Length: 112
Length: 114
Image 1: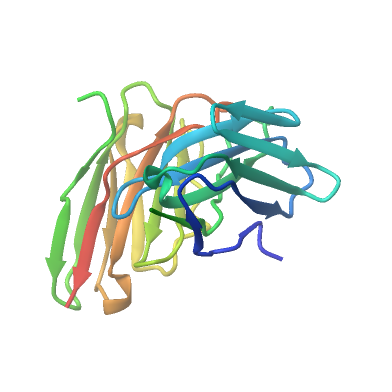
Image 2 (image 1 turned 120 degrees about the vertical axis):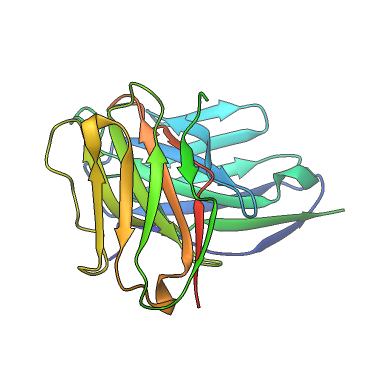
């Protein structure tokens, strides 16, 4: 099983829609999770960090399900500018520096 | 500058030639990563440096690939005898703290092997 798995998509949604996608992880020792956003031909940038059961930042909500070992990202009221690839990366926090392995990413396309 | 700097931004080379890619991380960041991203694909981990510890080279695809980090700062990724399948964007990232998880990426070096 891969360390991190994501549905590559693309998820095609109209403006204003709510969309959610999941990221499953294999290492049960993972404690912290990070969602990165990558625009086409650009470098990834941190979108959201999750250190407990979830996190909310404006239209974006991340929820962690430790029992099933997945983390979801929910985007409400989608904007055209949300079109990007969303990458998930788990981390075994509190164990010092470690190698961070990214999922392949989920591509989101928001249309007018 | 304040961010991660990579050079060259674009490199076109002939099959069989050696290439060097450079990464200048954010000053004071202890950890430095190299990832590779082929067109339409995800980030493939290559190598990871952290402080004075031995680097984690587990992601290097072959012995043609090597990397150094001198003085705990600048890093160079070297690809010897390049092959067409090496064509990709090579991304460098630096990290300040062990528990933040936040990586700051450079804009990448786009390598094309003809």
